[in-house]
Image 1 (tube, helix red, strand yellow):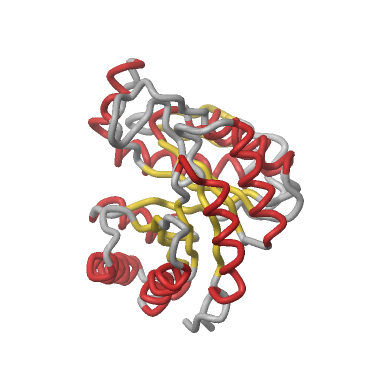
Image 2 (cartoon, rainbow, N blue to C red):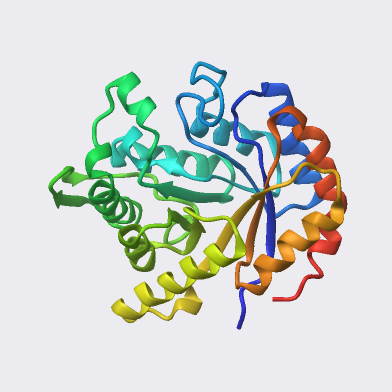
Length: 284
């Protein structure tokens, strides 16, 4: 049975205001989007200097939880190196409770070198190994009475994490991946794959095929893994949004996140909401 199509919007938390973010979250909730997203960076990314305003991603998720009623929420994706996995497990459980079980837990290996240099954050040179250990620890902390883990990068000794998440056994785990090693981790640990490393349909198809192969190597049915994709839209032509979504639906992507332009997020969120009914008619 195919996974249902779900649609969300994302305003990163960079080059914006809290007022505009709250408005986007309200639009997502009232328009009936399935999920709403932020990102996890400590310094600005993309064109321009890194000193542009950026709000912290997990604090924003707590605010989304308190500001909305029904829309699910998440971060695409949490940078694993920024937080000890035990701390991250506790933060995520807190947001899951604040939202009454609406958290989608997104995580990736992290990549932004400027942040690691600026703040003296270690681990970027072994980021995939750290992500592997964190995923094991997170799942154990969320599901087991206590966790003991002896790893290369992290060690836990009779570690507890109470309360447990509202969502059982844990919030859905979204792993952002595009390389062979992170795709292997996705196949082993994720409920949802968030495609990274490619945005064009041909690239997405190739990455999706690699994920199928990674699932086959460990005996997992690839159909059990939902696939998510992000794409930018400027709000000018609703048929363009329908075409972008339709191409990706045909490739098997059922979780869609529209990235809003930071300078015009409220207007484009409204336009995306007006298109939501038509988007839901697309066939997968």
